Image (cartoon, rainbow, N blue to C red; front, side):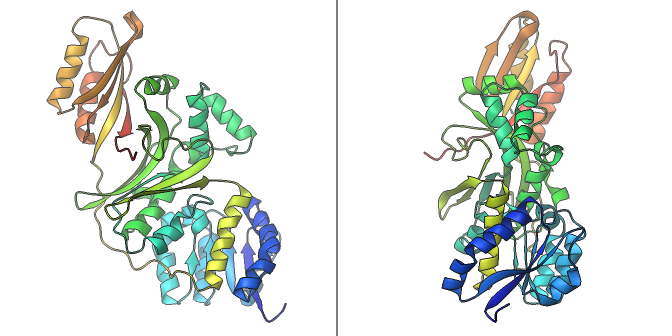
Length: 407
């Protein structure tokens, strides 16, 4: 290797690792042209190939695309303690052990970069760490899981959940075991990372409330169209009541919201602040080459002295009971007085109705409502009371609604 080489050790050689190796070879000459250093891979570690200690001894930087928590965590800690910079695409690791990794990077004056851990090719990490580092962020909304977004897009066209999932698996947008994607856990890990960057507060994956899309009904999307709403799996991190609320839920959006028209496997993140009003970043959320592009961008950032690790964490209380508008779906008997009873129970819990659709007769009657913003605890109490009535034929369903629009 030449004296001008910048040596990169690659941990993992799956879809992303192989794509990174190929992309680095393609772009190395151009990177050297403007940077003066040429990135080259000095070793690759897999289950059956390579020696970690030898790679570490030679490398200037380690790229970790193994996935999972261990041994990835120990590899990165050992590398940083040895004075090596690291780049990782590992959202689960960062959302569970981020503070340990950041503290180690600060203690040993090395860089830790992780753009590819959130949003694929969407450069939201760099924007939060650099472009908006002096901006007081109020709220982040994110569609940060391409698999679930693809499934919901297909369901909005009339496919069932099972049909949309099978198609996502067939074309490679969903894994054989899609649990993390469809339950919301993948998105929750990413929102924990974004909350840490935007607000400075340490948020562990286990502290993020999340629900997925696996229990949604096709008629929810049908009624949403009548109410002029679109359905997405949205992660939210926002300042509330002097604290921080972080959650991931299926959410209805009005057409004027920047995330409403993000379709297929694309990701998007909306950042809101009184200073900037709103900006939205969007792009491919998955794919080996797209993720590898974000990883290589982090490598170049380190080579040019990019952003330091996140500052030590701030103390912020996590708030769970927050206000939101809600969609409420009730299967009811078509009897006199049902609507009056429903509105009475809702009113007693200070739940105000914005719009209502009534459909069907007899055993197939339905009431579909959108509420004004209300505390989740108040709506939950109202729903529990409504579910106890004999005229309610199945468990009531609720879905959050984001009212804000940016036209």
